[in-house]
Image (cartoon, rainbow, N blue to C red):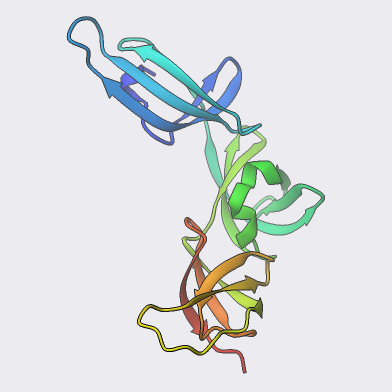
Length: 188
């Protein structure tokens, strides 16, 4: 693939390693060919590198496919998923999952990004409902701005929530940002 076709979140193979394009910047100097500056994240070890290419150069695009998978459990630093059709299991390391590990519930359906037989990444639903298992006591003070407190959900993730959230409530969390969205139901 020619470098001009590379965009953010493209997957490239450079020196035998798989990279995600985190940033792609195009500059056109007064003279000479255009320059493409890429910030690349290694999808196996998480290292970030910067590379510069000139227009007309080519790069190797990774051949990837997606599969529907179900999250089963985690063991050590590995998170185990099962293909919904073939029942084949795949493991992804905690390092590759990053913040996404905080939103995984047993039995949850995800989209698995695969390179051949290797699991590379997962795509979560945009919002997920999680039960609050612990929360700080809220102080009843009259203020103009809403007061936020720390609450811990069933996966162990700590999220800032409004003061009216209590243990047993089910809340919606945005998996892209990790932020509280709304209360889904109250614990009774």
